[in-house]
View 1 (cartoon, rainbow, N blue to C red):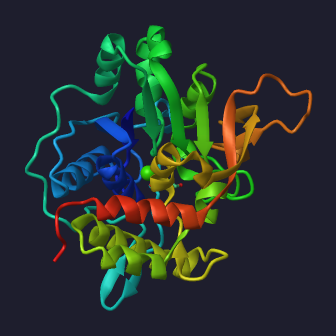
View 2: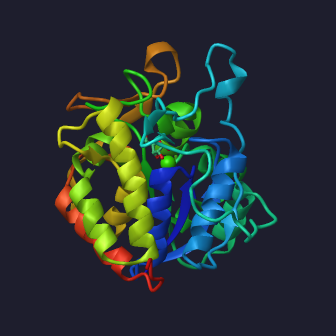
Length: 327
Ligand code: RIB
Ligand code: CA
């Protein structure tokens, strides 16, 4: 069992990742931490609580940072959410990320301390290493490691959904999670821990199709049904404004990080690279990979491809384990 802390800005694909982590027999989910990103911190926290409640899990939820470290102090660095252009389908407004997930409002409560405080307390007392899986902006993780740099040896790996080499989304040079808090990302890629980036190059290759959603529904479980609904929503947006190479398919970015923990071969063409994060102008949020063969020290691993067939099989296996029937 691999101990993990999952850091999310729930969001539709974050929700799939949370369910996968809760259901995996290979993962001990120690905590889920919310952060400002796709939506404001109130919404990402509420959505996280809703998913944990839906699966009947008792994993603790910690509310994280309500803004990036420094970015939005700069008037010319406009605040923007990971919004997609809303589309209307069968009379319903569809977005990549709804303000609130279409599942019952949370009755369970978040924990009384903040996510960065939790990270520091947990890591100081940890007797076994833990993997941090960050699928939103890296604000919480950077804040925690700024508060206490003595806990680095407790971190087995930091797995990040973020970045892009041949593929970007929020700007021509950047992927949203990195772009939303580039200073936090630069701090983390140079923090000295083992860092694995799961970028858009991998998440777009490991896309989920409408046929895969049918497989999820056929499982007859709450998680399978909800994952199918979330992925179908994402496919509608991709088809409308961000078509992938595979028709009627969506990247479900965050869940691929969980799949990687279960079967690392779901990521392909993983290379050690020297990566810096741009802060300024056109390079803001860019994952800048040094192509020189005599490059400086390699500071992270970067997955340039992903295996969509392995990915969907892993998700089907996980959702089939859900004891809560969707019927
Ligand atoms: O760019 C994709 C990432 O941004 C995903 O984590 C998605 O949830 C959003 O946070
Ligand atoms: Ca996310």
